[in-house]
Length: 147
Image (cartoon, rainbow, N blue to C red; front, side, top):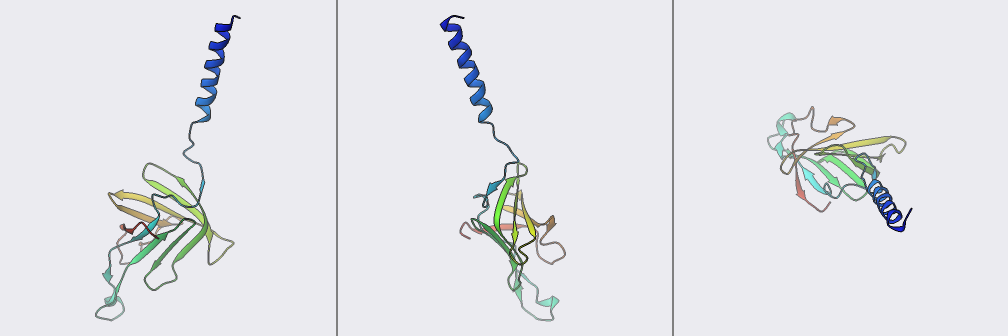
């Protein structure tokens, strides 16, 4: 082979090699939490006093996504907490975050955030919507980008 042909073959081979090396995997797990979700999320504040025989008792559900943890709770409950998190993109509008349950360190737990509108997400804990079975709205909006 002459030098021109060798150079051409080497160039094509290197382009093929680098092209294959730069493809991204959609199912790749990343450490921490996605920056797009970090911050304080909550749903609409409602009067839940009527469920307890009170005139006025306002409450809401809240989720705080930090760099390495996710904490979800009612205003006065223990809630769900995970740490040592990993995340992956599971569709064009959803993220799954897995980690160690803070209350039972032997158990793994999973949060899924699914965008359902501009600025609104549904939040699931181990596959169940955290607002299901409660009087609270399933739509969470971002209060601030600081957790």
